[in-house]
Length: 117
Length: 114
Image 1 (tube, helix red, strand yellow):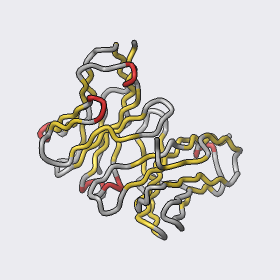
Image 2: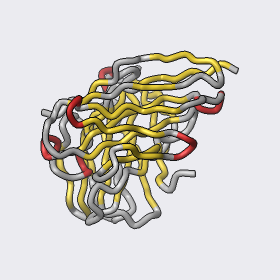
Image 3: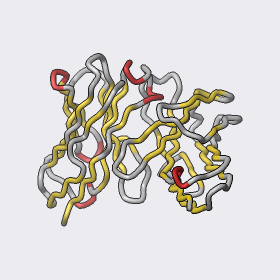
Image 4: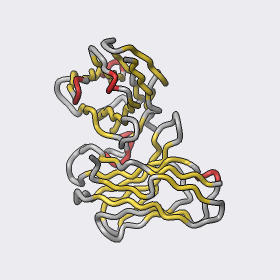
């Protein structure tokens, strides 16, 4: 079965620091990759996604992620974080190992990002 | 703002009570899902539906049941709540036929069974 690992449970940064959140998955075939974000008191929402093509994908609010197939990774990055980026971030993977369609995404445990002003 | 609505937002009930968690979406999505999430843990799929009269069990075994009588409505029911059911329950929807369309989530229901 597909599994998703997010290595950092809680990351604390100061404003303007650079961010990189790790995400690794287990299935070696064709996958579709997502990052979701949950701001305090709000619902989970899509931050960015990768299906095919350019492995560097850009999402909302200046976030980007790079798909490295050889490393089974899809790390999330942002050059300069803001206090408003404080949230929980979830990596999710969908591929034949998890049902072959969106209905059975496999999520990581999430990384809580705290940005201090 | 979410187009998928869950009620109640918080629920505290005693053991043995029957409860229904409501979920409605206004986007006309065919696919709907229920996830269970405990603090610091992954989201686990417990139920999903492809459309009206379609319901399936997810990856995580759950004593809850669901129904899909209308496209927009996907309630989850626990016949007899127990403390082990204490968790956050997230409802989501997505478009059928759109390959890998993203999930739209509700705000969740945080259930506490005493």
